[in-house]
Length: 277
Image (cartoon, rainbow, N blue to C red; front, side, top):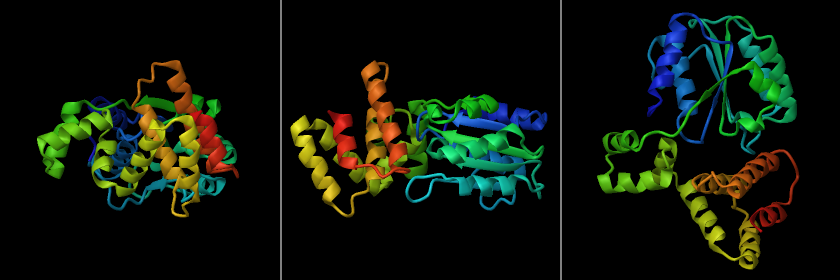
C-alpha cells in the first residue's frame, strides 16, 4: 500500500491519460518513503487501470540487487531484451530498476545506451536513494521525480488501520522512522533490521578505541551481514540533522562504502574504523 505522494500519483495518471509520459524517470529521495511502491503501483495502473499493488503483470520487469547487493551488466542486458519486445496488454513495457545507485559502472554505461535510444513503447523507472550515485549522463536523460517524507498523520493512520497498532506504538514508530512508512513497518516486523540497528546504535555510542574491538567481534561472527549492518548505519545517520556539513559527508561516505563492498574486495574492518574515527 502506498502512503502519501498524492500529487505525484495524480500527475503520473494525468500524463498517462494524455499520452504524454516520458520514456524514463528517476524516482529519488530518502529511503523507505514509497518510491519503489509507487513505481510498482504505476505499472499496474498502466496495465490494469488500478493504482494498486500488482500481482502478475505481463508488461513489467523488476530488476533488483542480487544477494551481494549488486546490479551488474547481466541485469541490464535482461532489461534491454525485455524493453525491446512489444507490449502485450499495456501501452508501455515498464522496466523498474530498484537501487539504481548500486549498478556497477559497466551496468550504468549499458543503461545509458538504452536511455539514449529507448524503444518507443518502453518506460524505464530508476529508483534510488542516492541520485549522486548515478552517472550525470543518465540523470540528464531521464526526468527526475522527488519523493519526500510522508506526513506523520498519514503514517499513523496507516499503522493503526492496516496493522492494528495502538496509538502509543504508532507514535513510537513515527519518532524513529522520520516520515518513512517503509521504515516504520520494518522497525515493527523486520527482525534482521532490528538486530542490525541495535548493533549500529551500540557502535556509535562507543569511544573510538572501543569501536575497534566491537567491529572486530562483529566481523569475526560468520553470520554477520556487513551489507545489512551498513544499511542500518545509513538509516541511523540519515535520521540525524543532515543540514550539518560533517554529517552529510559521513552519510555520503557510508553510502559509498555500501556501494563499494558490493563490487570490490575491501577490508570491512579498516573501512568502518576509518569512517567512524
